[in-house]
Image (cartoon, rainbow, N blue to C red; front, side, top):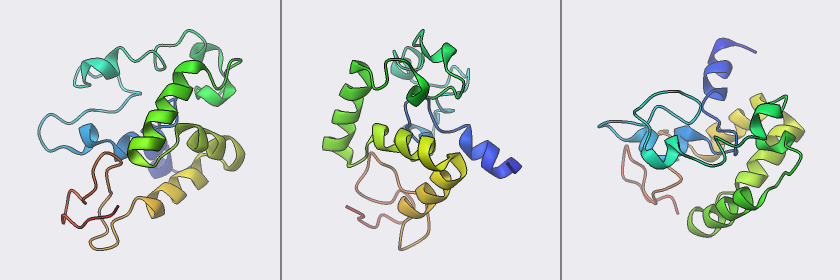
Length: 138
């Protein structure tokens, strides 16, 4: 795996969230450093995330929820339901894709799927408009 892919892979949370698509990660002032970092710049709800701090996660060979003995757990199902209904993205689908196709293919797919058609910027799952050019994407 090349260094760029490795770096991008570090932004994929154990739950399947691509942190690069999070508005907290994309914001200009005080950006979040991503789920897998130990940075104190993460919002409190991310620092105390039940999925990120799950006792089962340490027992997985991949450090992703799909390798967990209770996958998909109730917490992940609730998060997935919220993101499907509010943002049109599924954590469980992301995890299944990673497990089936590998992280490199997942990242390639994400870079295409979440690219602004107008300016080429990376879209946020939490916003309807591109943060770079303001083009509506949903």
